[in-house]
Amino acid sequence: MTTIEPRGSEYAELMRRVRQAGLLRRRVPFYIRAFAIAGGVWLAGWAVFVALGDSWWQLAVAPVLAAVFAQGAFLGHDAGHRQIFRTRRANYLAGLVAGNLAIGVSIGWWTSNHNRHHAHPNTEDADPDIMGVLAHSGQRAGAGRGLRRLIFRYQAWLFFPMLLLEGWSLHAASVKAVLRWPIRHRVLEGATLAVHFAGYLALVFAVLSPGKALVFIVVHQGLFGLYMGCTFAPNHKGMEVFTDGERVDFLRRQVLTARNVRGGLLVDIALGGLNYQIEHHLFPAMPRASLRAAQPLVAGFCAERGVAYSETTLLESYSQAMRHLNEVGKATRTSELRLVAISDPAAVDLPDIRVRDEVPARR
View 1 (cartoon, rainbow, N blue to C red):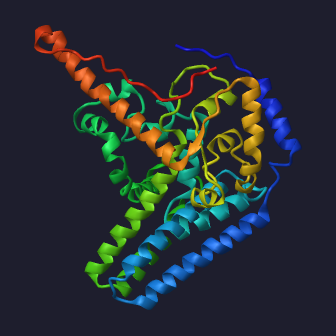
View 2 (view 1 turned 180 degrees about the vertical axis):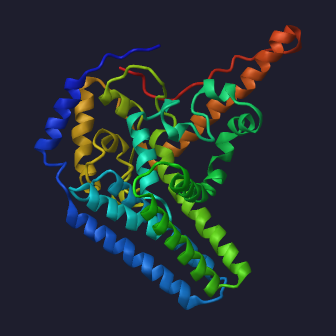
């Protein structure tokens, strides 16, 4: 097991610089504008939906509503990290509106699940985000069986098509959490989700014929999931993967497992500030509007300490992530050949296939 000795004083020094720069102060006016814009587009989108009536032109409305649903998810994410207001209650209520009511994703479930990811980023058996349908290490890919093994093998090719199911997955996980998890405010969570789903289905089927309604829902929810998945894909895939139990100090655990995406204001808006993934992981409560200012400060600090800091373009981040998934998937083929070689060494010429993680070296 690799061990990296804790260096808490380094993070404390970085925190001191960030506080001194005022980057942890609340940016309430920014969030008021963000909620107003997202809420306005949400209402306008549904107004256009009603105005168009029973028409196939509704398929042009679906991408707009998918995008505004994603923006609502970003606001719910920020509320879950208490970036918006000072009090837990105010942030929770903001998340309830942006998540449960507006898009049908439980803020209680999201916060609980997402906090586990932040505590153990890219850590096998600890980070829920890498223990799902994809394999992020050769060891996990090689251990897969049956359908899971088949998915692991072709995961680079299946990744984007599978994202079309991400919206449904978020809704299903929310409902499951309300029914089975010991989340806080279970009744309120369930009631607000019920209001969303009932209102959504009632409106869609009241305006559209059953056939068009089903097509609209499939397209809308599919594009919502695709948008969300394309937002999360650049953040950690292809970066350092730890095993549960490895001792790594907080600074390096957060920096080495994350990748930033540069691209200016448009990328900042499209990705909800999550393109500053390193800064966000180091300071989860930092308001989204302050992440851009924090980036050069954090990058400079990492350079001083010799900590590898990863930043690239959006397209290159997808390329790196897909190459990594493809390399990991090869481990399924390697393990199969090794099993055959053990039983009959003459039956197979075992190739030298290695899983290569395209990540910066630890320093």
